[in-house]
Length: 54
Image 1: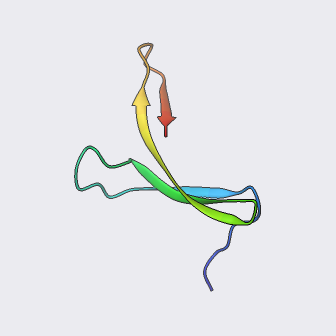
Image 2 (image 1 turned 90 degrees about the vertical axis):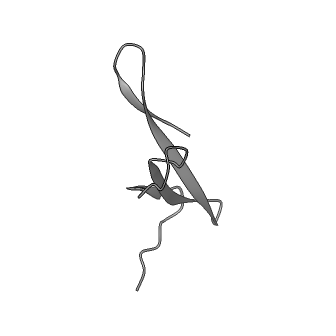
């Protein structure tokens, strides 16, 4: 049985990228009973702090 997210929950997983334009992480989230695909890129700020950008 596949894992199903509860309302307002989601997951991101490391993406096996074929090129640099693809997101670093991909996953899904459930909002209002609808499952959405999400993507995030790992970035570094000018101060050196790492963060996710979508």
